[in-house]
Image 1: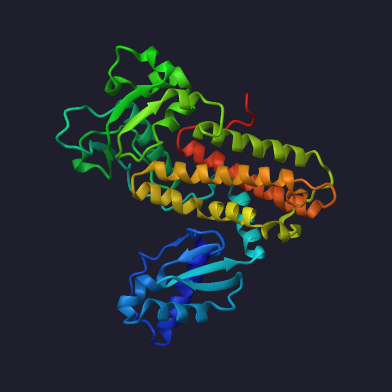
Image 2: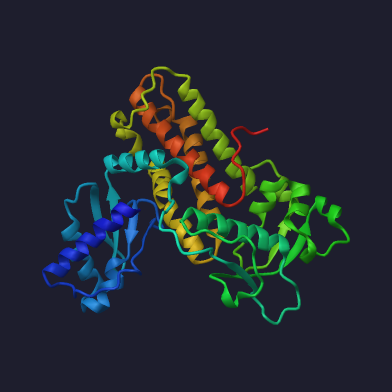
Length: 372
């Protein structure tokens, strides 16, 4: 998240000022990510590992200096040094409330940029295997290209949607793996057609536009793809399209229930931040906070699959928290006996709704308000 990045950079600047670090440092490789294991803080930062060589210090020693510098920073509850020199950072509920309020205020523009650029950004595709005689799949080119174009637009760089197959002069070049074809009972409708000939509308005619677009993004762009039509039509959480759509519809249903309760207080200045103490809620908050960086990484890596996986993780977090709350009344999103806690938890739901709707639109999918 941007705020935490500025905090870490401030700590590095303080160490530079006292001579522990050289003045000319490249900070571009410093990452702030979710820890791999639960209970390891809200975020983990690799700053000490990245800077240990130019600083001439062991990574854990440098991590200790950074931890001392950041200790007491408003919004940081705890700092732990882990492994070879990672900094695990735990944030206060109050800073999470501030972040969530920013998500809701930005709405569909959350994660967007106004940095712009001169002219249109061009997108081109070439095969991962240059020796292959197989043509590039028009359906896969359209789905991946449209998602990248949408994300470029979101980041302020207008994209040319006339996708190319000659990458020499393109601004964005995507290595595309082969489309191996369709499988499942519905695949018989395409009998007699080569997979490389199918466009996105032909596949959408079988499983719907949303499933066709998202299905084409369910593997990394450079990997081979076989589209399982039965899986895309499955009405269960095993189907990522259903999983995502159901999460958005569940958010809408919870929000509407809350809006019907006249005693719920939605003013963020009065949220009960105890709502953000639970680990399930904090997982959702971390995923909301990282959403802008996932868009940026997906564009830089030419990999819409990355954003799709992030959204699936967010949907999973929402579903799991909902199912947990069914057996634990104190975790329920709507509490008749506590309007301030309910307001905070419904704000979390609205944050998930905002990001799912925004992210699905970037990937070419709608976000249904109810499941039919």
